[in-house]
Every structure is written in C-alpha cells, then in structure tokens.
Image (cartoon, rainbow, N blue to C red; front, side, top):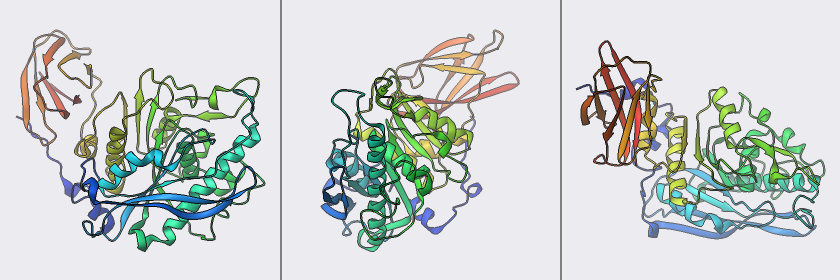
Length: 419
C-alpha cells in the first residue's frame, strides 16, 4: 500500500499569528464554541452619515464573538459581513445565522447596516445610473467606516488587525469586492460628490489590508481593477443562471433597456482573473441556479471558515466545483498535495453511491485501484477490469479521498469527494 505523508516542515509557518491559527480546530468548519458561548453586541454605532434623501442617520452594526470566559485569545481574525438588497433594502440581521456560525468557529464577526436608497425608477430598468453608482459608493464608504471603527476598538473586541476579511451577499458582496480590489482613487470614480472613501461616517483614519473576501452572488464593476498588487483571495457562491448579477459578465440587474445599467463581472469572471494572477480562489457554482441560489447558511459559513483559515495558515487551495460540497478544513489544507491527472475521468464526482472510472487514452488493460483517506489509510481497493468501470462507494464516509490507479509502468492519482 502506498502511503501519502504531509511533511509539515516543507511548509514553514510564517509568523506567530499564523501558527496560533493553525494549531487547533479553531477557525475551521467545526463549531469550536457552543451557541450559548457567543456574545452578541447589537446596534453598536460605528458612525453617522447623510443618506440619499439628505438625512443624517446613525450607522450601526451587530458584533458576534465568543465570550472571553471561554476564549482567551487576545487577537482574533475579523469578518465584516454586508447584507444584500439591491442598495434599496435589507438589514444587518439578515446575516444572523452565518455570523453566529462563524463566531462559533472563533472569528469576531460584524454584520453592518449601511445607507440605502437610490433613484430606481417606477418600473424595472428605469432608474438613474448615476444614482445607482452613488449608492454603491455610499455602501463602500460605510463599510470602510465600519472597519475603521473596529480597528479603533481592536482591544475591546480582541481583533487581529492583520487578519481582516470582508463578505457579503449580492449588493453586499459587490460592496465587499469593490472595497477590497479598488484603490481609493478608483473607488472615487463612482461618485465625484460624496468625498473620499475614508472621509465619511467617522473621524477615524486607519488604513487596512483585506486578507480575503466571501462573495455570495456578487460582482465587481471591472476585473481590470484586480491587479497583481492586490492579490486578495476570494471564495464565491453563485447560481449559473443568475440574471441579476451574472456569473460571467453582463449588465447589472439584467438592465439593457430602457436604461442601460453598468456592466458587472460576476464570480466566474473574477475567479478566472484571480487564477491567471496566481491568487488562491474557490468557486462554488449552483447549476441552473438563479440569483443567490445558495441558501444553506451552514454550508456557506463552514466553507468560508475553512477557506479563510487556509489563507491564515498559508495553505489556501484553489477549487472550482458544482453543487453543495460539504466543508472539511483537513481536505482544503491538503488539497494541493493531490495532482489531478488528465488520464482519468470520474463521474459523478462528488459521488454518493456509485462511481464510474474512465481511463482516457488507455488500451484495454486491467488496472488496480485504491481509495485512500487524507491521512493515507487504505479504505477500498480492487480491480478495474475495463477502460470504463463502475464501483460501489456507498460504504465510504463523507469526505475527500485520494484515488490511485496502478497500471503497468504508470500510476494515476486524483481526487474523489464522497457525499
């Protein structure tokens, strides 16, 4: 039996902060803390700003974190979540479930309200494009102010200011993406009348670096703003048939007439841009799914926790997959060890009961197969009598496995996901 060993010494830990993030099940898909151990501070005011209607309002957030009675960590990674709603509606408690789950993993999580409203017309696609762009910019200003407030109060909330993540849904994820990838000068092109990105909401002037972005069915105005000097990883969830924010590119809200709204690049366009720049990124596609097709908050929270932990531990893995694939940080951390071989095709993959293995370009030959756990233990083995063979995998536990196929003079290794 062949055993695959992860040599940790080959992948050095880069700093003490990363080391503390990587030595336990904390910050992973596991509920490290119980729900009743999470403290929620509601309606924390992080600033004040003028709305679309010219009214000054308080800007508030809810903060979720494990109680200091159970978590003595001095510096914890921060996730700021921004709700969706077309820049017209939505509220911070839309993210209550996701925020609580991420806090149970060990993150400090802030879910924010921000200024809403724009001239959207009297029927679909009759609104004002300049008004929409101004609404996008106001949301970016408010999210920026929220992060500055949290940095100012880092000791109160036990925040590691070197581990700041953004996330959102629809309009909220567009806000998060554009705040992450746009420079202040680029962002100001959305509106010439609302002031600087860091000049609204409060008087704090902190700067910060975004370490990663959660993108639920959002997009960015132009992928050209994603450059090699902003190598920020992204995890995305998107329906392939989304017409509000297209997964590739198109006009936002599907508005081509009578008003032509601006183009937007969706999750798949961003994914390919990041991959071409060599930046770690994960794309989850819901086949045939509409706008914001992923409704499983638990799945999103767990996959996001694993992806962000991969960034913190310097072993982030890129992935492009369909459906709702369960999260496992052990899988994510070791995914880069598995070489996808073009000499074999597995379907369906992920598989639940039966798996078909097609050997591509091989003459008729008998091959041996082994299915190994990620720790290297042999879970199944047998013979593949033909170029195309079907095996029963129903007895395997849910998770990721390494499939090896031995033929005369050749060994193929690939990845198998069991549902």
